[in-house]
Image (tube, rainbow, N blue to C red; front, top):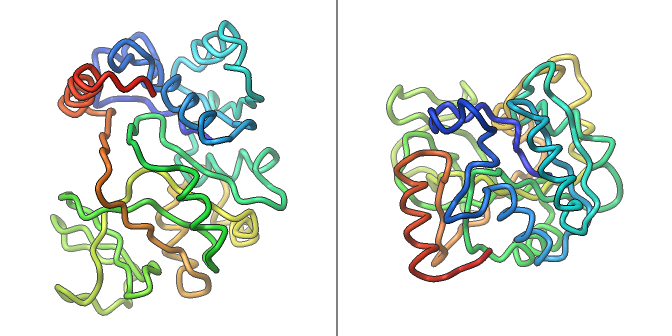
Amino acid sequence: MIFAAGLGTRLRPLTDRMPKALVPVAGKPMLERVILKLKEAGFTDLTVNIHHFGEQIVDFLEARHHFGVDIHISDERDLLLDTGGGIRKARPWLDGDEPFLVHNADIWSDVDLQALYRRHVQSQAEATLLVSRRQTSRYLLLDDDNCLQGWVNKQTHEVKPADIRYREGAFQEMAFGGIQVISPSLFRYMEGSEWEGKFSITPFYLSVCRKVCIQGAPAEGIRWFDIGRPETLAQAEAYLQITGVDG
């Protein structure tokens, strides 16, 4: 699944006339780069959620014959559902016997998606999140086995779950990288009324991490850009132009 429904407020005024997912990065729309990377990694059945200027994404995909893969549209134009709600709405296309990979449209990296997927399949985890030690304000708290235990906001000092005993150095503090692999079995925890409509996937993970392993997959030695911000979009463009990387 590709998250392409965001409002892209950080990229205004570019997103005043187009969806964030179609903002070009070194001459190629973000969404196209993600689709081609997924296709190269062997993914042939994709779901793309839409909201902001959603019809432009539909037209873009149709004009390119869906890049030769099966693409389903999860339409959130009536209500933007955030990451958790978006996954739950797309369940008809994601449920089944195989794990599914979720990729933010505004993330560019050279991470090996096949290796990330294999890591999940070979583990006992119900979700595997790409993480790194980069500087941010919000961190996932992982134990020595890389299983999620909590979350902390270093600016506000907010900690979740409320009963977690947090202190500096007690956990691995990792930043989420916008790419994850999820086993459909996790949907059984989304069936309660508290997970209806709009919700973020992070509070959901924190609500189940004591029951199942939500694991982090530390990324080392990779190039990674959050291309949803002007300054990092410029950095990604410079890197892609210099290196000539096409994906």
